[in-house]
Length: 441
Ligand SMILES: Cc1ncc(COP(=O)(O)O)c(C=O)c1O
Image 1 (cartoon, protein in one colour):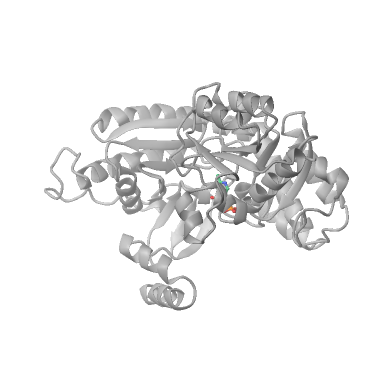
Image 2 (cartoon, protein in one colour):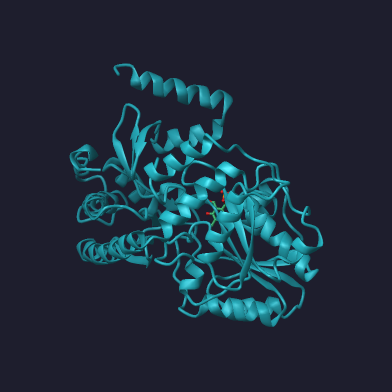
């Protein structure tokens, strides 16, 4: 279409007027003006621009790809029969999703409570812990992001809470360093902690990898001091670590697992708190104590049940194992090719953080990858790191293609920050990689 650039400009101008002026301005400053067009599998078309391979996948929303055909069919067929249903009543499709999630979780898990987004389920999990313990303190880690709802905001970055005048009292929230059990125990000793809330690998901090026994130690300490351990698996769950739940892959059994994002299949917002008996105590006392209009929406349950089925299949597990090895090998090679810039890979399954030697290396790499047809996102709380999150079902062919594009982008990004083979600005960046359409989807 000849007028595509104009369509894009009109949409952006209108968005600046009626939707979100600050976000539009920031995107314009970054030179990013994506307008989502056709999307399928792990690619999307930027209207009037290039086709991009998506290795951000909205933090996991598109874990199974854009418009996954099986999920879409479940949605379309389901819509012939179901709507949002009624949150007051039981329903076979709700039961089926509960059973599927419980079957994929540690045996100690007994109940599932549903919500729409991840933040809501974080809020809910903290409420459940506070009810179960009759305490209010929540311990979280520095560099965590748990969502933008009420409690989740307070559990996250202090500046984000302060922005909305939501700074919690020091008795309600404490922060400790990730991967530091001594600091955690020091706060737990106060004896007033309801919950230890931890992203199994903190995404916005760039997926730092903890000591192998850290998360099991968190569970042990929380229990020793009467607190509950809530595992935020919104980004790390649903097989992304190579197992259904990342914390379980580290041998930890939490009291609650929070999942979201990919549970939606990219179609129907769904999140859940999976609980053990202690965490689910409130359900026996007042089952109406936590509710919302759309929780466990029946059509959403149909979609999410299909998501869990695809996610837990052997062929999906095998593909994740294949991708894990492929990226481990190929990224190690790339490190040897760009040693001054590409300094490390944090990896657990297909959850990856690419470390660079420059404080803005993640930002530079994100911009360079964009030029080379790959959509990714830096780690906002550590901009030296790029979040690298291929989906569970990506083909080996596409993964190889992503690595080749990354190779070119690493050279450009290193040059841009002055750590390349040539001084910054002295050579033009490499030509953009070939359009994605040259490679089979
Ligand atoms: C680790 C983690 N927890 C919770 C959330 C909140 O989920 P939502 O945006 O669906 O509310 C996010 C969102 O990015 C997240 O990354």
